[in-house]
Image 1 (cartoon, rainbow, N blue to C red):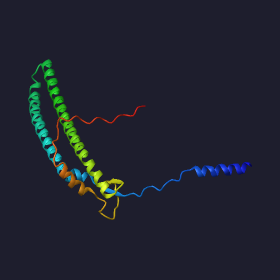
Image 2 (cartoon, helix red, strand yellow):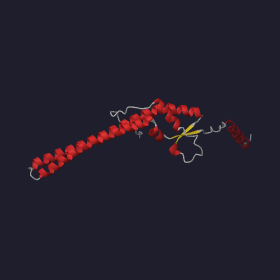
Image 3 (cartoon, rainbow, N blue to C red):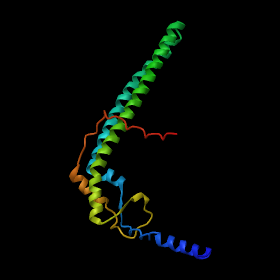
Image 4 (cartoon, rainbow, N blue to C red):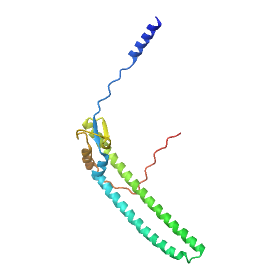
Length: 192
């Protein structure tokens, strides 16, 4: 066999051994608006109402403590001029400690609000998952896009948001937001 015929034989063998790639499946797309689900579902509205109540309560508590601290600060300012230096320093340090404590309380309340919301939303998402799987199966879809990512669609039949909200309303109309929820764990950092 000549060198050229050997190359041709190897090339033919390589081509015959190469698997034929099948055409990719035809995309059947449905669209979902997650923001609308949170805003318009009964459970989403229930979460929002509870969060607003907790936030208002925290704000009122902190404002009352802040006003008391402000009043104490004004009194301390008036007394500072007549206090002995060592007493003055101790009172200023005590006042600053109270300010830091109030800031820490505000930070903890903020973290509680965030953790409670995250846990409530995760519970809602857990209930929503099987609903979405069923809707996708019913529509014969193989791809779900968030409505925010869609630039243009010439028909509204793609959108499953309304049906998802209706089914979520039946399955989970409300949820108790847990203000003692643990904050979600930070994402794991890749090892170097």
